[in-house]
Length: 102
Image 1 (cartoon, helix red, strand yellow):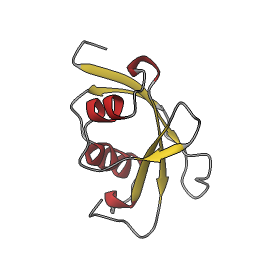
Image 2 (cartoon, rainbow, N blue to C red):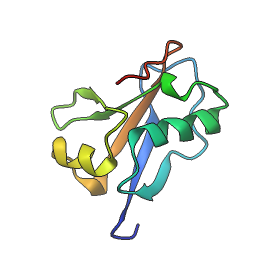
Image 3 (cartoon, one colour):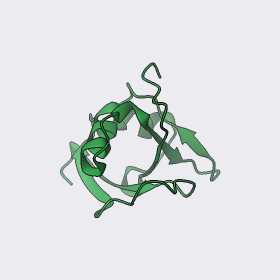
């Protein structure tokens, strides 16, 4: 990735069983990309009309999953949670009841 981009794994959450995995789970996007844009990407790739039904989280250094805010950029996620941009891994789950206000 270029300096203004981040390459990362966008993998199905271990508890997600209803939806198929992405064909490719490594993607490269602008570091300014927001979580809601990744939710829309997932909706397109997986053929789901309600993009807000996707919940994205990251695994913290303590191994716990932290749900991510829709209005945060990847840069904010990396900075706020003290993550290594070179090893960034996001996980997604599909919830039938989307939550737009997060």
